[in-house]
Image (cartoon, rainbow, N blue to C red):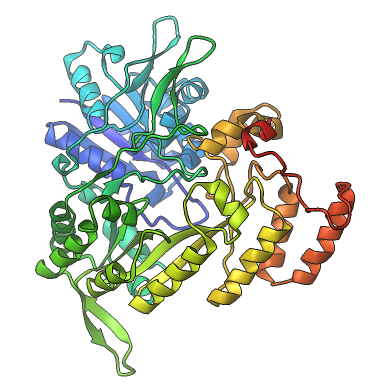
Length: 521
């Protein structure tokens, strides 16, 4: 059987490692179930540098070195595959995840060390690759969902891989292959709720894959059924994702029984006291199930004895608990007071809301289906249920303007909060990447790889898609928002209008075309 080394690349170098890579943990479990010999080097957890990485690569005669991640891991992956080819010249190097799926031809060109790329889900694709390695007669073109190199170096995409239907058929993640005690449990705390801050043994799970919404800044990368293969003007077949007016979605989620028995397994095996749901949007799945999915998860949470019971200190504050608290994501228009109260009674401590903006004219362009009123309503509903709402916001949308900046600040006063917004970022695989690709290339002197190398978690700015503001202006405006300095914002608006030749009393915007795709060009 194949001897495979999985490598988890470094992500978010500015923070400590907090999340066991769920996808790699699942693939490792699948590979072991098929009888393969599996080891994992978690470069993100250990962060020991290239010398240790190379020592690991030399430690055995690996048949396969496999890695993957999101686009922001590109810097790390580039270093890893270079070292892997140096130290393991005869090993098959396989790359998957969103980083490859979003730009398969570009990644295979920029990373010539990679032998096979996995496009979309790898749950069935990787076992087929390993089977061919065992057989000693590899022909990657016969494995659906791959990109590989022909003998003359031409890139070949095999037929598209269909999504799996039975998510409950997946094994539990191989968490035991990762440094839980040494690294991850030490970084369990999440500063979003009292229970989150007190968490000491946290793990993450995926209860669903994808989302029904069409947020134009989001990238599903095929796991929501939004991917299709198209032929370009050069005759090359490429994955295509959301484009203006063309959206497809496949809703898939684990059964409540699978979800809760998985958590019970983690509780009994690893003694966890907190779980984070990594799902894009829990409320999408609940709505699609007819409002039964989350209720049943909560009912089973009680039935399996996972509802937290507390130990208090002398001041009456929570000291510790038995059972498992949890958190996840919500949506302003899909939540309701009833389900929020039910979730709280089952141990939910906080929910992340992608509010993005409180400006109606901006929200209409995002594709999320929310409004300022629904954002505010959901915030207070969640607070009243006893769950902490965690607002996420973004500035730098295509039609961001001075009015939207002020409306966001006014909403913060109503909610009694201040939010440090992320910057609107056109990640590969999102609609905005498709629409603004020419603009991105202009900003990076035609070098798309330079843009990929520059990408982070959107807390820092990279390519700008705002029609009204440049990078310097967005950074400055965000600082003024955080300081509630409306005087400086008002003063700069006058300067901005003068610089752009906009007469007094006219709308302070350069965003005048309804089709932002044409405007971007």
